[in-house]
Length: 346
Ligand SMILES: N[C@@H](CCC(=O)N[C@@H](CS)C(=O)NCC(=O)O)C(=O)O
Image (cartoon, rainbow, N blue to C red; front, side):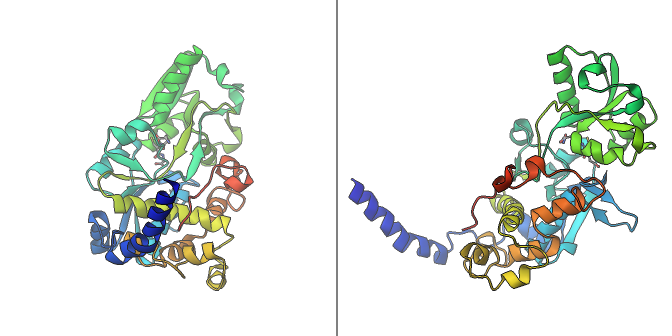
């Protein structure tokens, strides 16, 4: 039996593998979404527009942020040009319908991966680009130090978000009396809190740290240390186009893998001469990893060259190189105790 298995396995490797690749078992012609993207010459991404660190428009009118850069990486993987990313700002409740209707090709808008967002909405999450958790923003002058101090408080929250649901769950589970004040538009909820309409504002804690900086009195803002939920944020695509799902998924993984392999935006051209097999595969020196997704074999090279590796993207937008200075924490590589782990590109 063992011998038979060995023979079958050897036969598959000898014949099936190479034959599969040469016969094109690998899907290497453009599927529906990639064809559409190639035809219009751009990738349209729903991204945040008013959340420093994740997605916002800077003083020069340029979109910046972690989610924005992941979109640029996808555009670069496809076109060799991060400038082919188009950004579509939406309110929280519009994010899922925008995919269903075909308005955008991918949503990368601080979107939490949940079971029902996939199963009930015909979507697929392609991975996690930021591990977050929900908390509360309060005014220091209110004296509130912990979530339990919020008993009887009004809390501004946005509709169409997991934040709204988590708040209700948390209030029920802890027996805390909360008055939720729900807003359709992302900016309205925040402004209402800023104007004193609510005692607290609740959403993902890293977003709170970011928006605290743009409140009227940033010094008086405090994010509570209590984390009431798990918010794995990441890109989502429509179900039914496996190739597009793979392109978005593996582009994100390529950015994470690049960090693990020490490939940066600055040294990537030197790394083209590396003899390390993993580096050579990632950068398209060997193998057909791009072509398997109907892309150029330099897909990952182009993505990394355009925006840097995951660590560089984090640092520039949210970490030490940004005004927010958020710690890497769970978003560090698995080799340093974090959760960022890319399956092998081979
Ligand atoms: N991550 C949570 C909640 C936080 C969130 O992403 N909020 C929405 C608004 S409801 C948003 O897009 N914020 C960023 C922005 O548009 O600037 C979710 O997926 O529902």
